[in-house]
Image (cartoon, rainbow, N blue to C red; front, side, top):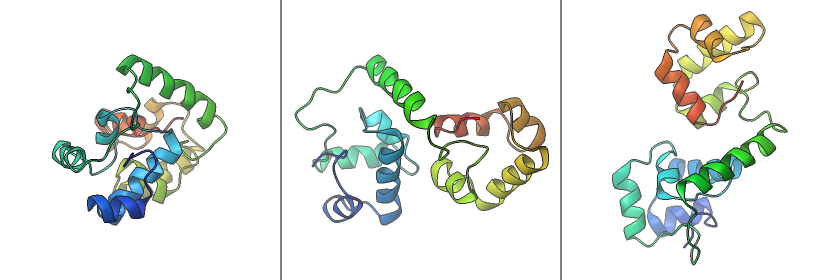
Length: 154
């Protein structure tokens, strides 16, 4: 079964992925497009190396019958898709993201998500990642990087 075509229910029943992680896969795929490599899958919250290895061993595939693109091609495709899809969507805009989106997409706990939103509202929106670090001091470089890697933009 192809991870890019499987429903959350299929992932749960056929591959014993718990419901939350199955939904994370589908949501990530819906927002950022198809997975091109197992490294892409490892970026989904809760999918460490061992879990990805187990899914591969169980027969889950990526683009069944297709040769996956090189890392450079996949990065380029994601960039193009990101600039096309995200410019029309507020779903991954840090200045309009809900606490639930922050928690789900970047695995922030509820308190940190609310803290970030309060800082954003207090200054009327972030204009740069430096604003995030300055106005929400608990968001040091590592947390800002995680937000960026999760697909959030300003």
